[in-house]
Length: 145
Length: 142
Image (cartoon, rainbow over all chains, first blue to last red; front, side, top):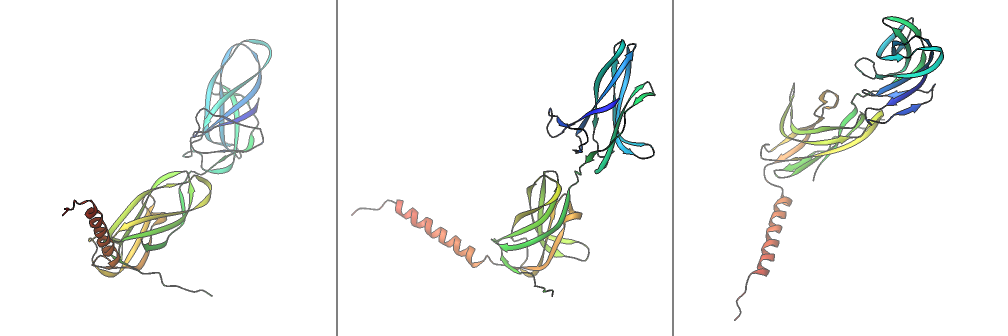
């Protein structure tokens, strides 16, 4: 299982999606959505599994900042079938602070048990600041008009 | 060498308008905020406002770098302010006072009577109107 593609669904332009090649950094803002698409091969009985993805910081363990999951129904298959599915992760700056160098990963779960985990994509996400900041505010002139 | 220049003092009369120009760097999303200005007296603890004005300004989207903005606001001099010299100015973005509130001290003098120019303008206007009206008045033919 690996992360195959990343898309940005900007909050400012609903209905639009921006595709990013892997190994590029996606710049996101609060309320944007990152669509994480994974590819994997499956063989086995029909099952409903959980596709889970998270954006955070890989340290000794993965410090998850924002995450999401969804149910995936897999049909019975006696031979290996390559599939791809996606999960949308909402950027919420109350949980993920503006900054660069965020990492991401995805995994497939059965109940609470991890079945397969993707390699971590490092430095894939930058969260831009939405803060309102002023600098050198001054009264520069005043005159009668 | 550092040279210091005394701030410009403006002489105003009742009925005049003072235009303040503010400049600042802005970083953030596009927003509509309130530019607020007042003439008054800087006290020990707070600014005692006598005349104030405000207007809505639209700040540009500037997510990464600071954008230099220049915004002005007009303050009408009314009879609420007593004739005196040495008034102070204050300006701020109303929603972000801690980041923006600034004062300039001892730069406004107010005299009690309307300025000679505003008085003359009114008189000239009146004279022009009377002149125009007289052209349309019926005249008796002898």
